[in-house]
Length: 345
Image 1: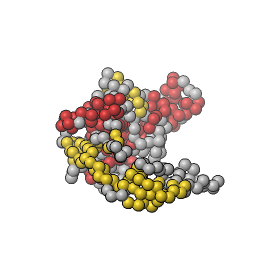
Image 2: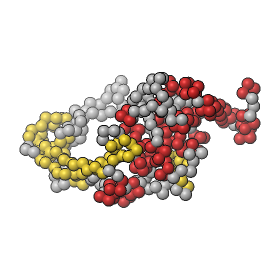
Image 3: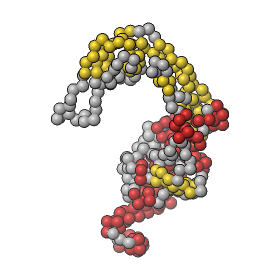
Image 4: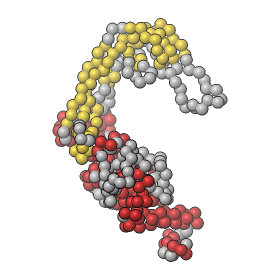
């Protein structure tokens, strides 16, 4: 068995639409709706959705070519890497490079027409020196930048160290936190607190964004000539969902079907789950692509007999394929076996 899954949406689109251009891919992604937060009732229609409930965590599906570049795991260009490098001022304080956020339009969460927000460095203000008693993740020296260890809201330039104590305690044999090391130093020191200020600039469309900040054009950021990769969806087995590009058209690499599980679990995508997700998209049954959407699967199969046929066929085919691999069948033997009546298998 397997269930539809929000993380499988990009793969399911390629599965059902082989040979699409990147613009067609973006358009098909834009037409989907899903949520990891909202739970829908059985009484609500299949295509019911609320934009305000759609999650930012899965909204790479609706961030245009920027989102597609992320989903396909495209490599960033060397030119982009050079442009977005941050620098430091004479005090060693980081001056951030401009940063881009592709977001829904304010008020209506309209993902079909996103706006672009660029955060730009404005100024750094240094405040009067003061004494600070605090922990530090790292050993500090005069001139270093200290940062408050909990949420990093307070920062300062170290001007004098009055007291230092190494606080880290080696874990004993019963300690379960094998990889965790907390703040390792305690300091009484003098610092010059500072704040880095930024301003935000909004753009209505990609054209105006690219005109003022050409480094944020998706073709400058991502290498869209990349021929293959895997689809980022947030699953444990993301790297098994492969894509390939030929003549500027995208396909789900058939090796994917050899790698993925027959079914699927919460964090693992499988073949029958891929088919269920594709059917949810095809029928615009967004309730299936919601929190606990699996509870609606049986009703979905009852309401859409053609989807039931495809889904049940996927369950059978995936299990027979697994059995054939275990028995080391040839492709011909598997096809003959698949043609037998169900009650004779």
